[in-house]
Image 1: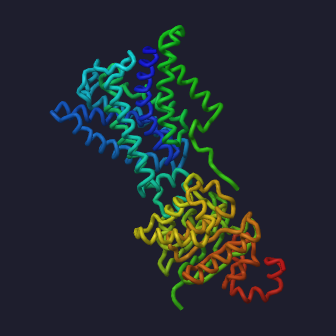
Image 2: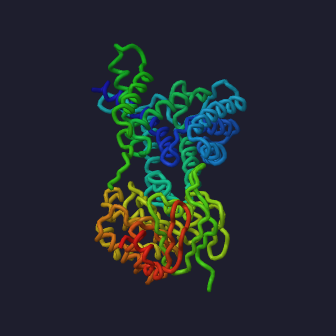
Image 3: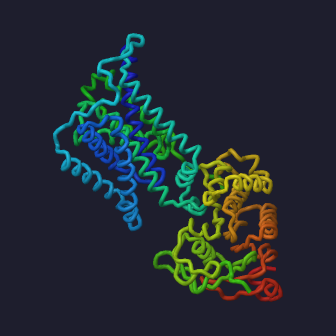
Length: 299
Length: 238
């Protein structure tokens, strides 16, 4: 039982992180029907900025402010000045822009800050090893913090979507772009803000996950794995569903923890293989994912 | 005579290389009801989409005598022109009331928006009953009511209606036409209708355009058209 619980907690922690990444992908996808492959690299870049500021004596929490602002501006600008002009000519080329941004941003981070790993400070000043004991299982404070952060982010997005005018516009664009335009909504602006919002959330998510995930340091390849698991979580949940991103992320995290834990006979970590199987299975059996819209329509 | 609310001069539009609409002149005065009649494929929907800012065009488009360049739908809403698109275009995942709120995003007067929502709920009681339901679960007739109410939420001066009778039961079509005629009479909202149901549209229209293979072949006063035997037979079928 205690081993099961320990694995469950570990799975939920990883799952919360996948869910955060999935959320950023879903917010972009809902508006512009694109998977932004560079989402992780945007977050990597802002985390480097945050690290650089801490080196100059800033408090880690304070560095999140410029990180979030830069994340917002960079992503919004990428949509407005790179993605949108290309999309007008060729939808498929948008993917190429994403890949170019992916390598470009990673290279930029490397050029500015070098390839050596950095020690990125922890947002919560608890020791890595401090934990609560629940029925003999360890629930690390780190895990509580990550899950709490996910709850806060999801709560914020839900309020934005359901209570504000901007949220209404974002939902309208997600369900029918042309009709949203006919309502008087500036669809391009909603695209831009959605990208920016994803960039801002990514900045926070990366600052939380970098010190927690092995190797616990800030390095250039750090976001690549996260983006893969985040994408799988988003596809599992349904690419245009916020609820789906959360459920998809948590199920993926817990599922992988269990498989890696109990399936040790399969030999070592098979997370990536399982993730691939999940994607193929979802796309084959239920392309719209668990909660993705199946285009509710009655004629 | 005051400047027309909307005036298209030599308007041409199409999709890629295929020109669907050639050199079309259309004019709607404030508070007027005009109807564009034509067979399938005549370019009626293309005309409406160009006027609503969904489709680029060449030629001239004047609103209140001011030239409007190739536009975007949100800008046309700003000019007071609102489209009820063919196929209704309701935002199916949004609730009925959110569809109406979305229709009012260009407005700043919150109290007025809530008043208008109440007003359209009174006009279309079936929407009021289903106000929390996702729009995609409504029947075709209800969706058409919602599409009309949504388009009116921006308080347009000109409502473009693209085949609102399409696929609906005659009784509901009759109801919808009575409603828009009433809106025109009470609020002074000008209407530009595109219709296959010519008989019904002619009843409330004061001017008529006949569109054939992308060109206006005849236009004039609706009453004169009713007199003309040949046109009655060809376009009105009675």
